[in-house]
Length: 387
Image (cartoon, rainbow, N blue to C red; front, side, top):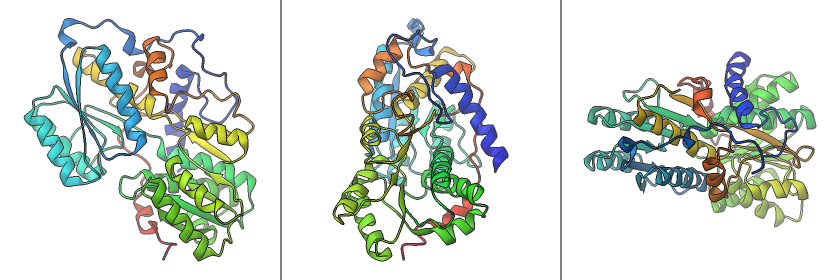
């Protein structure tokens, strides 16, 4: 597992060197509009052959993470004179397939797909492949063993995010710590990889196996579906079933974190909360001490990376097909200096991108490959401690 992590981190470090962002939690210079312009691919001149393109953009669901990546892509596409048609699959594989077929019928010039799950995503890719329409994936990876082949794919560093939180918890708590995990939606690999990285890091810190960490230290785990209200209900159930006997909470995104904090507040107690996402509002909560730590994984940069891939495809350029998004661990001792790209403020991000100041340039990156660590062993653990 260490070898896999080392290879993945190497890719991330290359990106962060270009972006001015540290992937290891070290203090870095704050990104500012006064910093030197980068060489982002989005800054090049538009040729007449690239104008007037029609892009079909399909979101898995209503999650704000998906929406923010879309907003950046749409804005940058508009600068190129492209039209973007958005639709949502409502987390339904059948609807996703229908959406892809509809985009094919509309004869779009490219499809960007945030897939409901990796298996269906690959099948959807096959539909686009047969129609001769380039298909690009954002946020999650299609099954590399499936029939469809992507023209581009930018996924989140989901394993790495969980691993970084595990490193922080392993340093701050003994091997007897009791942990509640409020997890993301099952089946996309995101939640499973968040858990896997977390368990691997704790196993290394505490001299255990990942299974021993799960058996000994995780007292409750259940999906909150990446939704605030559902996560609040799940956290209330966790408090009830554990009698409040736990040391910390690890939650897989900050929309769910809001629900977790509401549930905790109603008890009159406080528990350290570790999250993943790195929204501007959460950075402020870390400063205030409401939240212990997060890992910044901005959907805005995913949107820019996929945009650059699509643009390169239209120009006939060679580009890396598989890329991992950047990430920055944020804790109280680096919260004032960590270099964080805009997350919620997509308009600000787009202005930075147009000025070449996000540091995102896919042409400087190596292909990360189509596979994450094998997370199949995590499937049996989905919701296992909530019964």
